[in-house]
Amino acid sequence: PICPMPVELKCLSHTPLRGLNDPGADVVAAVDAALVAARAQVEAFDPELIVIFAPDHFNGLFYDLMPPFVLATAANGVGDYNSMAGPLSVPADLALDLAAAVLEEDVDLAISYRLQVDHGCTQTLEEVTGSLARYPVIPIIVNSVAPPLAPYRRVRKLGEAVGRYLARLEKRVLILGSGGLSHEPPVPVLADTHGSVRDFLIAGRNPTQEARAARQARTVAAGQIYGTADCGLTPLNPAWDRAVIDLLLAGDLDAMESFDIAEISRVAGRSAHEIRTWIAAFSALSAVGPYGGECNFYRPINEWIAGYGIVSAHGLGDPAATARNRAA
Image (cartoon, rainbow, N blue to C red; front, side, top):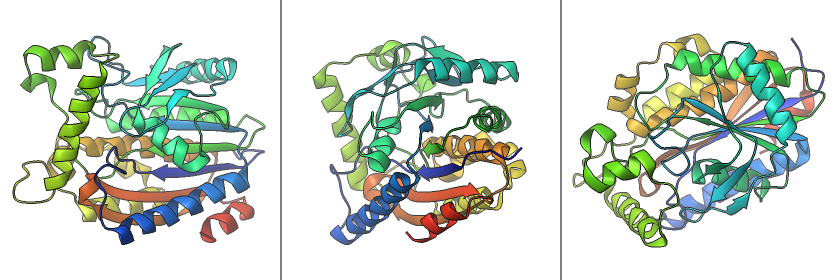
């Protein structure tokens, strides 16, 4: 089906270390310029609805109940690291309607009426809109860091179900994917933990400011040595990053259905699975109709523990979107 109203997509990496462990000024300036261009494109598009696929980093979702996919009818940013805190502007009735449509397509989707979201969701919203509440937004959290993870074919099915719903809306819709690319920050694995760390992974909501500060300090320390011989975490993998971007822009979602979870963890880092938010976003756009797109920015940035990329796409029937994205 072809959507009667335009649908655009942007996928962005995020990093908790922005402003806390920055690379050289030239790199920061290049990223800033790319983000200014991305925000200008969003403002020119003026979306009537944003759907954002994002991960959670043990801030809103824990192992006391860890669903693979969660849609929020109300959400609040926790303000971790330097991210914005406060409520998102979630249209509850529309969110519930979307959830019902996804469930009708045999995709098991959990619902939250009071979801806490972290920098994995809010940083991208802030960077492309300047706010958490400027536009109506429906957050969909895709579990990307808490094994066992849903297979990639299920992520595609989720995205396609969302996209088919969006294709029926008479609204300008912006689809966001927040996460990736290759990276491995110091996130503990439940199977390797015990005591207070294990308790945190199971039910660690609403930590104290001291606990947040200690977590932030550990991540900053990891960023200061990431990519060196002193760091035991999986390094960035620019070749893998570019291969993933190429597959998405080529529309080769079939290849991504068979992505091997253990192999991605090995070659690109355990948190590289955040790329499933990009796959969900592109799958949603593909369900709306044929698309074209471009990579607006890519650079491996060890200081941010991020293969940092920005990618845009749009329906091929929307020449205005093509002009906007290529002007960046």
